[in-house]
Length: 325
Image (cartoon, rainbow, N blue to C red):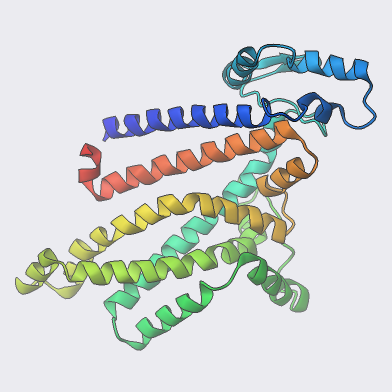
C-alpha cells in the first residue's frame, strides 16, 4: 500500500507541475499585455516600464517561468517586499499577496465541498442500499422516484427556494454565513447547513440510483449466489459479499465527480453570497487580476489532486487488485 501511495503522490506532483506550466504560459506568455493590466487605466509610459521591470517581464520567458515556479517553493522578492513560499504573486487590484487572500477564503469552499460530500455519500449510498435490500417494495419505489425528481434540479433553482422557505418566510434559520469550525463547530454547521444541503441534493439523487443498481448487480454475481446456496443469512451475505464490491464503481465515479463538486461549491457560493474561492475567482476574472486568477486555478487543481489521491487510496483498500496495476 505504501508503494501505491508513493506512486500516486509522485504522479500528482508531476501533474501539478504541468498544470503550473500550462497556467503560466496561458496567462503570462499570452499576447495580452500583462504589465498594462497591472498598471490599470491612465498609466504613464514610465510607470508601465517600472511595472515591467518589477514583474520581470523584461527577462526571457524561460527566466520568468523559473522565477514563477521557484517562487512557489522558495518564495520571491518584489519591489515592495518579500513574498514567502508558496508565492503566487501579488494581486493587481488590492496589492495583497495572492496566497494570503486564498488562504483566508479557502476554508469556506473546503467546508462546502467536504460537508456536501459527507452528506451525499452517507444519505445517497444509504438510501440506495435500503432500496436494493428492499427491492420492489414501496421504499424502493419511493427512493428511486425521489432521486429521479431531485436529479433534475439545479443549485441556482434550489438555493432561492430554500432561502425563501427557511430564512425569509418562516425565519427558522439565519442567512447562510461562515464561522470557522475551530471557533464554534455548532455555528459552523448552522451557518452552512442550507448551502451544504442544497449542494448535496443533486449528488445524493445520483448516488442513490448508482448504489441501488450496483448492489443489485452484485447480488446477482456468482460468489454471492454461492454464499446464499450455502445457507448463509441474507443480511450477512448482503454486507459481507455484496456491499463492498458495490462500492468500487461508486468510488470510481466519486473520483471523477470531485471537480464537479468543487465547481458546484463555486456556484453555491455565488447563490448564497458567500465569500469563498468561487467569488474570489469571479472577482479575479472580472477585474482582470491575472495573479489572483492564476493562484485560484493552481490551488483548485492542487485540491482536486489531493482529493483524488485520497480516493485512490480508498479504491485500493476496497479492491486490492488496484495496488498491483
